[in-house]
Image (tube, rainbow over all chains, first blue to last red; front, side, top):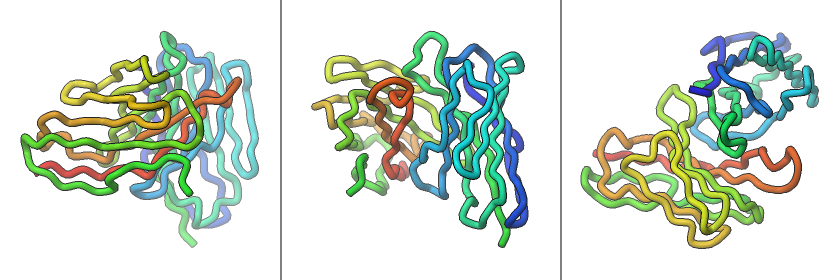
Amino acid sequence: SQQGEEDPQALSIQEGENATMNCSYKTSINNLQWYRQNSGRGLVHLILIRSNEREKHSGRLRVTLDTSKKSSSLLITASRAADTASYFCATDAPDNFNKFYFGSGTKLNVKP
Amino acid sequence: DADVTQTPRNRITKTGKRIMLECSQTKGHDRMYWYRQDPGLGLRLIYYSFDVKDINKGEISDGYSVSRQAQAKFSLSLESAIPNQTALYFCATSGGAGWERDTQYFGPGTRLTVL
């Protein structure tokens, strides 16, 4: 399966700390995306990183991609209680770049 | 107004009933997707469509069918609902140019319970 797997499954930190979550996948990709989901709601796109990129920033978010290890990490700096959510990585399929596979997510709890 | 809407938002039904979930979008995207999410799990692709005449099966299409009535509308049907189809269902769209094309925009979800 192309599906990405996030690690850890759950993460609990204090407000102000940094949160790091990881995603590993199995086959070659064109790009990898990170999404956020507040409880029971639709997913919201956070950032897309292409296979030829190694690092990307967006506000307090930093994403890295290591295609040799087939892994990515999402770093949220100076976390806030409002960052509490589940975070998913999504990879496209090598045989069909218009199909996406989602991991099972990391549930982040930021305590005020 | 939301760009991607889903109706109904919640539905409780009985085993064997036919159910239709509807999705509409105002983003002008050509691609639409249906996913299901089970508690504590990620999303699994049921069907996807690249335009009105292009429908494709995803990972878990058995027991489901879809209809792309127009570019803006994509419906998911459960012909004969069963309890293990109880889940949160999401519609998503993507389109545009370049890498933006791969960004998916999700609806708010439909919570379906099959008794």
